Image 1 (cartoon, one colour):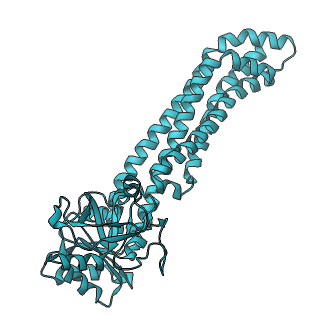
Image 2 (cartoon, one colour; image 1 turned 90 degrees about the vertical axis):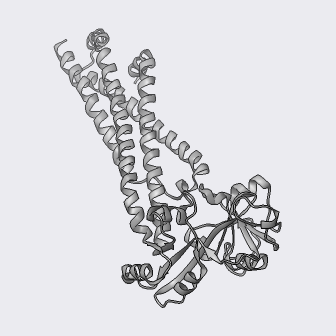
Amino acid sequence: MKIMRKSLRQRAGRSIISIIALAFSVALLLVIGHIHEAVRSYAQQVSSEADLIVGAPSQPVHLVLYSLFRIGPPPPVIPWEIYEDIAGQQEMEWVTPVSTNESHRGYTVTGTTARYMDTLQLKAVNFIGSSGKGTAFRNDYSAFIGAELAEEYQYQPGETLTIANGFSPSLKDEYPTPFIIQGILTETGTSLDNNILIPIEGLRKNRKTHGVKSDYINFILIKLKRRQSLFAVQQALKSKYEVPLEVVIPVLELEKLGYYERVLNNVFMAMSFIIGLLSLMMIFFNLSAGFAERKQEVELLRMVGARPWQLAGLTLAEPMLHILFALFSGVVVYKTSTLFLGSWIPVINSIQLPVQQLFWLLALFLLGFLLACLPAWRMYGVSKRT
């Protein structure tokens, strides 16, 4: 150990560069895998809550992404009567309307029900108690606001706010009845953090009081009693109404999108693994480059009684220490990175390190061991001839 410690100190510069490169590749490999798994898991959980999404004709993927993750612009509106008719059908377990055509200080106001917040797995902190769960509206004029919006304007539960029709409203577009902030939603890392969620019935009452003649919504989430009737209900809804509708199955649409996401993830994983291989090669070439220097060391050690297997073990232990320390450092950097990213993208905190990622680490370790065996075997042969 004393000899090895001195040897490592003598070659510290090259060793540190190799360790940093390998640790970086390990951290990158684990972080990419963790983000992919967290996003995939969250999308799967949310999309499985609703069997169908109904909206105006648009791209199916866009309708799903906006409805469940608020990505992209809002879809066109559809009449309220369609929701009422769908809600009255026997096949439905629950039906949730969502409207996003009002605003407050330029921020989107979402008129919906507590079921929508359950579907998106939204939670509230610092809320005024209600008879139901934390995200159940106390009455038709309650409101939950996103975390970023609350922080920007220092809103607190119990304060009131007004909403207006459209996204660039004037004073005449403002609705008369204010809403009371019931609670603040926990951060999601999506545009919902800048949203205000209010009961759809309170929104409709305000529209009527203000004289807005058309009653409309942007999309409808549907949960069926029997999933076996999924495709039959989808086709029936598409052909039943005079108004053209887009009826999509969110799980299927996200699966199509997931193919491209998996391809991109695999490319990044492969790049990270290649960086790891290059780092291992760097360690190998560092050992090979220093082999000439070690010949004199070998002669001296053989003179004082060192056996060939001891010299080979010394040559093997040195790179293995590099690799183990780099793997450990990479895991530490990965853990630190996920803590930082978790405050930015909260869904990352929802899962632990996927087991599959451990196989990447094991593969790097075994490849490193095989590479380290080559100079060790060469050292064994040289020392036997000395």
